[in-house]
Length: 185
Image 1: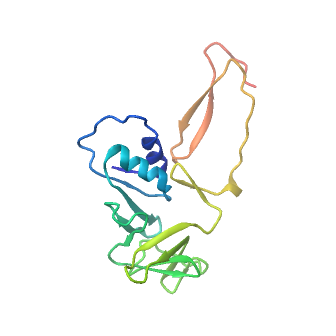
Image 2 (image 1 turned 90 degrees about the vertical axis):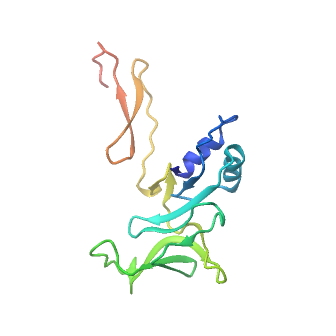
Image 3 (image 1 turned 180 degrees about the vertical axis):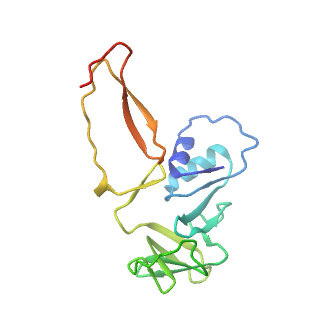
């Protein structure tokens, strides 16, 4: 099963999970899972929690599907990883994208990930330490707090608030007006 840390947290919060004999393994990606949540998940379900790290720009960068090195990952075949001043840089033989020419991100075949990390010189395992920019993960989606606006309007008592998913996979709020009520303020 695949999921983001939000899903792991939800599953770990179940007080008495049912027996799931076909549940053999779970892999997560998107951000780090706190150690306590990872341990709670593994204790409750009796399955290893694997880890996957990747980016839209290059695809899967590395994995530890069985949780043997958690939270570290082993780079995928064909992927080179280096740490420069604490930032992970990624190189592939060929980029899956055309036109990556931003010298602030892509230079001499190396993509700056904007992720902090270290590489164990003896094992080659990569440990991701978090983001170097202001982006945060919310339910597995990268969000820039500088571009987010939060508002808490007062809702009329005769309207109910519902949630919908936009086609862009970002969560939006909408108002559903009860039948027969034409006030739209």
